[in-house]
Amino acid sequence: MNLYWLALTAFAIGTEAFVITGLLPTIAADIDISIAGTGLLVTVYALTYAVGSPILAVVFNNIDRKRAMVLALICFVAGNLAAAVADGLAMLLIARMVMAVAAGLAIPTANAVAIALAPPERRGRAIAVVSSGMTVSTVLGVPLGTMVGASLGWHATFLLVALLGVLALAGLVFGLPRGLPRSAATLAQRLAVARDGAVLRTLAATTVWAASIFTVFTYIAVALHDVGLTASGVSFALLIFGIAAAIGNTAGGRLVDRFAPRPVASIALALLTVALALESFTLKFAPPMIAAPAIVLLLFLWGLGGWAFYVAQVVALVRLSPQAPMIALSLNASAMYLGIGLGGMIGGTLLAMLGPTDLGWVGACGLALALALTLWRRTVATP
Image (cartoon, rainbow, N blue to C red; front, side):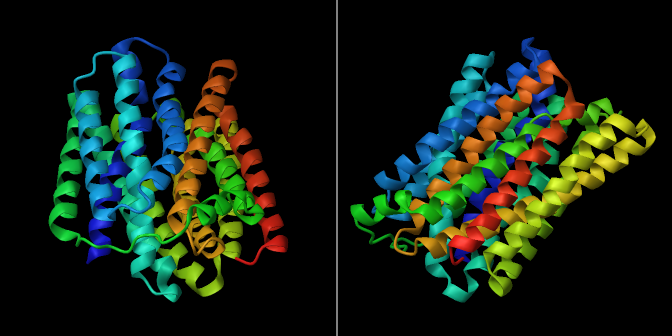
């Protein structure tokens, strides 16, 4: 049961992290800036997470993990309340930075607790339970938040997420025991994780994967509007993405336990590469009547491949650094959000220069590079 309280935390954080992509057009119109300008809300959040997560992992490494997660959720709720009353981009950016710091502590800690509580042969499934909170957030939280934003305004979406954060906080306070396993790693062991060549190659693949995906996904609402989908249609498309993410997450955890992380990661990246290339092809050449359902189908493939890859990367890093898993997981989270930040900047630049139809080509090229890094890792590392 402990894992499900952790999953509830991931659900609240995941809802906020991903719902922003569906709100960008609404926020841009309300505060009168460009879509690329609102993309800073994704980039700043991601870079704050990337910088903050490994620092927080070291600071809180030997502190009771329940206390660390409760503190993180309090900050997360406060950040969402600040966003709910924001009247401009500056305050929104500050609020999202607070949320990013909270998420950068909470998610790696939750994963580390899941790993500590699970036997080695079931770690993939334990990670899948926690990350299922993120995937369920894409099934329920993101479409709901997008619909609330479209009907009541984007401020109401942040109030909704704050309420989810309060529920998650209550679950941690009353459902999670004290004295959870904490790391016994020395400082030298923790530093060694960041210098390990196999770990660095794995982290590089995570960064390139995230940058490639979010070059496209940050501005997916723009592409969906261009093929004729209304706000409710965008919510439906994100619901389909979320269902696929939940399937990919669960299947990825089971496949990793059975076949090891590397083959699962490789197949997932190959699937994603094809899906993003087809996304640009569809936007450029398919008539609107065909393009809209085709893009929704491709979002389904993104969800499958993206979350299966995520689970595989987490388990691979734990196997590479068993003495300091929380440090490795925080570095992976940092690498992922660094990639998300880079993807938002790359996508925003290309959107201003070219258009949404060209983002998929760039994302597919990046994913091919991530696949090459993963296949290279296969020849030099054991996971």
